[in-house]
Image 1 (cartoon, rainbow, N blue to C red):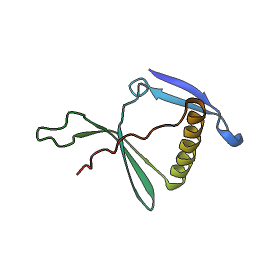
Image 2: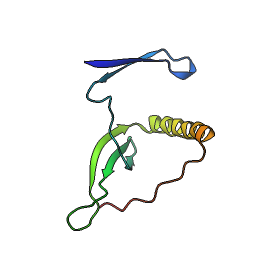
Image 3: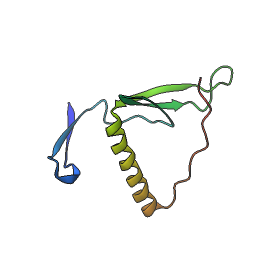
Image 4: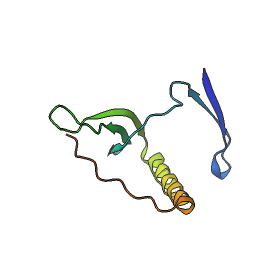
Length: 105
């Protein structure tokens, strides 16, 4: 079973029907993102760092999702994030940045 949503892209692009499997629609929680790139693509790794840490106190992170996309699409995502943060802050006030996460090895 899947959910469907109709989306009209900005700029006069034709409408898109978004299909989402029921297992994916709840989403996943992430409190750390790592971004790497090479000429052809950007890789976004969304991780969850467990607050209690590992057996020896080290940070433990689980990969929750990986998105691989083109440089051109990455730039569109960056613009969309900037616009959404601007709108959010206009409505709810400034967002305070979270404390830095530990360096993962």
